[in-house]
Length: 115
Image 1 (cartoon, one colour):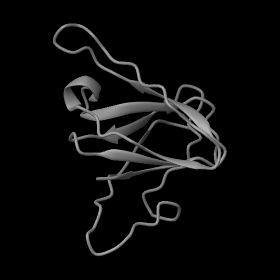
Image 2: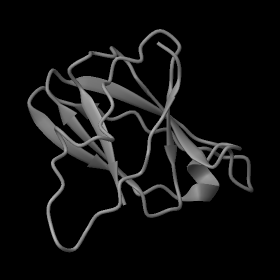
Image 3: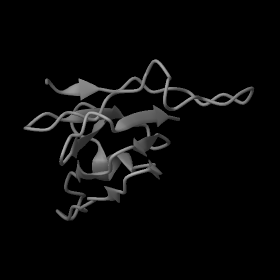
Image 4: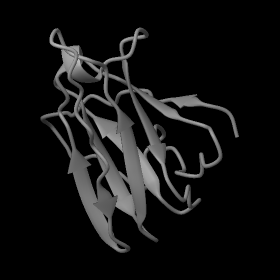
């Protein structure tokens, strides 16, 4: 599976988003060197439906002092997690996206974005 870039879904005031059946849901099966890229303006969050559970690694960029943060959360089986928002100066790669990789890459995890 190749790298994938999310399409950000705008949260709407008038209704609820179905995070399991929405058109922008991506399967979390990008194991083995493939990454997800999350377009980030500093207000974006990632909603993860951890059907079978997984660990996620987010790649930071060095800040003005050369320090970088490490983010490696675990989403347990059957749990839903909301990650973010991310400060662009610490998390955005040169393409303006946050870089994320699921560890096990189970096909039943369904990451989704809302802003």
